[in-house]
Amino acid sequence: MQMIDKIYIDGAFVTPHGDELFDLFNPATEQVIGRVRLADAQDACDAIAAAKRAFPAFSHTSKRERIDMLKRMHEAVVAKEDELYEAITEEYGAPVSRGRWMAQHASNVLLEAAKVLEDYAFTRRAGTADVVMQPLGVAGLITPWNSDAGFICGKLAAALAAGCTAVIKPSEMSAIQTRVVTEALHAAGLPAGVFNIVTGRGETVGAQISTHPDVAKLSFTGSTAVGKAILRAGAETLKRVTLELGGKSPVIVLDDANFDQAVPLAIQAGFMNSGQACIAGTRILVPQHRLAEFEARVQEEVARTQAGDPRDPQTTVGPMVSQKQWERVQRYIGIGTDEGARLIAGGPGRPDGVEAGWFVRPTVFSDVTNDMTIAREEIFGPVLSILTYRDTEEAIAIANDTQYGLQAYVFSADPQRAREVAAQIDAGRVLVNTLAHEPAAPFGGFKQSGIGREYGTFGLEAFLEPKSVLAAS
Image 1 (tube, rainbow, N blue to C red):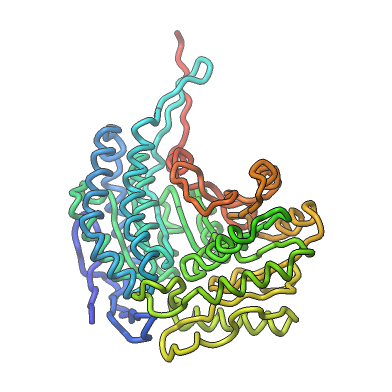
Image 2 (cartoon, helix red, strand yellow; image 1 turned 135 degrees about the vertical axis):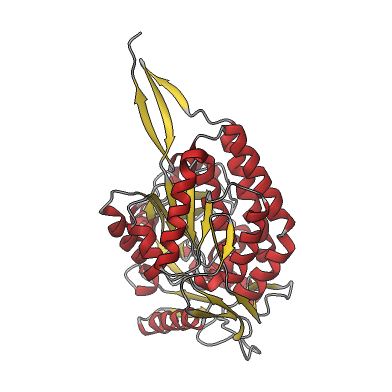
């Protein structure tokens, strides 16, 4: 049983002013594995004050100094990789392959930010003016539980690269992972107050960060509903806001696609991170005349998809993060059946042979129409919907008929044709015949999937404000 009773403010591990204790669970066993003492609004204010004090000096550090800091942070997180991997597996339930990738991603984003900074010009000419990119100030970074360390390090890397100081509010459900990351970042030896990490609830710590007048920038990853609340909270002080929110990503399988290649990719896109991914490809669009063939291949692929013990190397779908999340997914499976969709794989309850843990049977519905609840709302679990289309124009129309626009996938035997379809999809990222990630490319959503972009130059500039300087010659 781990007891986490410290937060990180002004370069030191301190006891929170808040005194609420929150249980931490292993989602694969449903057992309590730890307890975290949560920060409160006073702790958030203390962290913001520390970041504000640190900002004047830090904002004037050189590009080289900040690159060196990011590289030290990278090395420090790499040194904690095994411990972080263990925390991810125990506290989040990520399967072996995913958990190792998540642990490595946390350090990689720091190095990628350093690479972006190497080539970035903070001053450029625009006609007769010098345009200076100036750091915004204190950044409030609010991160989710589905990739705790990666989001902490990714958002912090961009903020620090820009010259901002930061206050981070991670999910209270990920406190063991947060402790490991915090210890690593502390070991990198940054100036006191440059980053502060306060684990607490959204309605207390998150609300304080979102409304505090000394916070100039908000970056939030999470649900669309909470993102809207943060946007409203920040409006009073006109905070600059980046939101990376929900998704209902379409997977367009064109009529010329090779199903031996497309089906495994489609299933991986849908079940990635155990389905707890905003970019999951949960609406699979297939040509009507090839539906039976596609369903047969999907059933074969899902039958090979193991849900269960995250420490088993054969497992690709781990547990849901909490009982609440498990119940949410079960409710949506029931809704799909009630609305007339046809189960072709999975269904309600736990996988066969699994007696404990918040595991969901990898589930696929067919005969889904785009007006059904399971095709409209983000489920955040391993539940996929197959929809049919008659021609490419209808496929594009169905793909775009959603309030979301975070990511999309197009599979075709003709790469040029796939690119032409991708050009017509309203999404921040479209993956063509691949599931690759490009850290230099911007990431973010159209429509209600968010505002602004993260990663690469676009992510850096989200923490900068352009200032034009005109002078007599």
